[in-house]
Structures are given as structure tokens and as C-alpha cells.
Image (tube, rainbow, N blue to C red):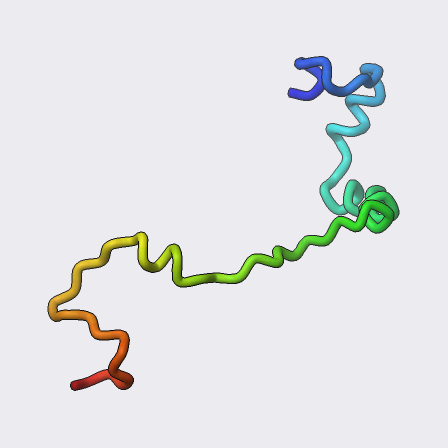
Length: 72
């Protein structure tokens, strides 16, 4: 897609080499570039209560988050 849309400038032999390259080889080749750019594969977002309050769920009884424990 990058070649087709003109976003990547490669010769035909270079494109064939890139297509035949495995994902592990690509990762090894890009290791230094990723380290220099500060790229990490971990997300720093944490789950919060905002999403939980936006998703309606139907239960067989009323939900009471203020009372601890499983049974009333």
C-alpha cells in the first residue's frame, strides 16, 4: 500500500526483498532506530472507572458498589 500510494520510494528489487523479509528480521533491523526514537512496546494507559460508568450492564439484582463482599 505504501508503494502504491507513493509514500515509500523503493526500487522493484528492494521491494521484493522487503516483502520476502520475515517479521523477526525486520524487528532486528529496526532495533537501533526504535531505541534512538524512544519507541517502547508498552502502553502507559491505566484502566479507569470512566469507561465502566459508560457501559450499561444488566444484572439480576441491584448493584451496590459501596458495600463490600459478595453476598448481602
